[in-house]
Image (cartoon, rainbow, N blue to C red; front, side, top):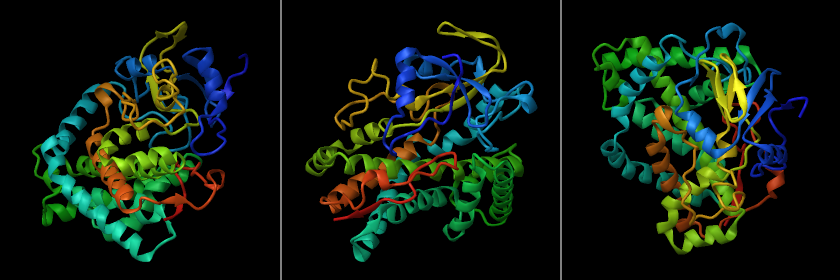
Length: 390
């Protein structure tokens, strides 16, 4: 195409793969596009290339000239470069070494029963007050917030504040609002660290405070990054996963009939939501070849894991939801930046769908799918509501 196409691509409804994205995929695996703010970027849509490039150290999140780097949007968090170009790889390794011990299989196993208890409690309240109900409000939103609060040692009564700051920080259209949200979130993290120094508990922030060589500022930054990432994305996945099942009644019924399918179903629900194009931003640290394209140092490269998860070369009938499929999806990334919180997200999603199908086997939507709305102004997107009955 002579003129680069513009992101984000239009979707018919929240579960659709954007038609233009499907057209691009049919033409190859790398495409020149314009981001939402008009900057040029390379969009990589093929599964094999996206997976390989996620592990390629010639791509990174930093930029040698960040003030003049192409941007995906106005979000301070994800809209442009992050980190120091000269020390990025060492900084990433340090961050992971500090956080990984808090997400070990042993710790996650110990957390599972607590997540199941919290899920059951929320659905008790839903059953008591409904039907009907808004599944976004009764389960998708509160569960990840409850879990991350307990894990980090963040007071649950502060949820309205940090939720608002997180939403502001992730705003993709208003840079000033995003910067203020991030500053508010960081300031809150600093106050929490001060409190944990004085009165430690059995939680991640307290344990980081007890780790030698970690300054309070770094603890505040790491803990607030976990607070943001640890609830925003899971809120979205619970909502979209439930919507996928409720719009595919045979798949919902299969889970009702055989709850042992839930862990596998969760992987398919992570793979299957349609995307409007975009993906994970990276900057070329040097010139490199991707397919038949030469990407130059400093270029913005978007690794579209949503498109890769719908690559027909890898997934038969990719737009169809099949909870018996065993998808090697890229929703958590791949390689050295693979999502540290993936085990926690899986535990929450498995608990949510196990409880939902066993306790509300006749659940159904109360509105047509095309009447549902998705957040377009924030980084993670997601449904604004999910009205159901049973």
